[in-house]
Image 1 (cartoon, rainbow, N blue to C red):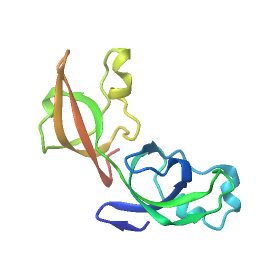
Image 2: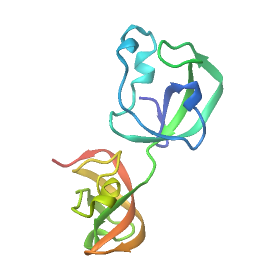
Image 3: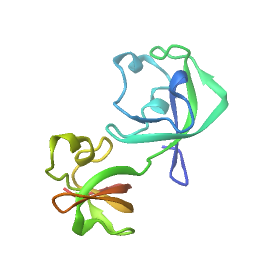
Image 4: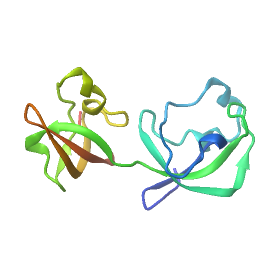
Length: 148
């Protein structure tokens, strides 16, 4: 994994390569096994959310899967909006993420794509008070750390 200040250099489909674009890496397609560049495409963690922060305009490669080929990009793991117990919602604090039970309409925020139970995170910001002693926050995952 090639990183510079939290950035990861990877390859993504030409049509997806837009600065600010966010995606969840779901892994490689079966066809990728044949490709000589598969290690450069598959250097992201499955199930994690990434944001494209830079496109290296001058570098493109042919691809078995993506029409138009792939571009070299730099990505980061962005902060993720999530619902947490209010007692853990302190800006700047470190927490271990644990999904909370809440109404079905808020499921995507209580179980956000890109975070799993046991992830160590920093509370970047407290965004809103919610019923039931819950708060909406922005969390930044501390990469490489996970509590079981």
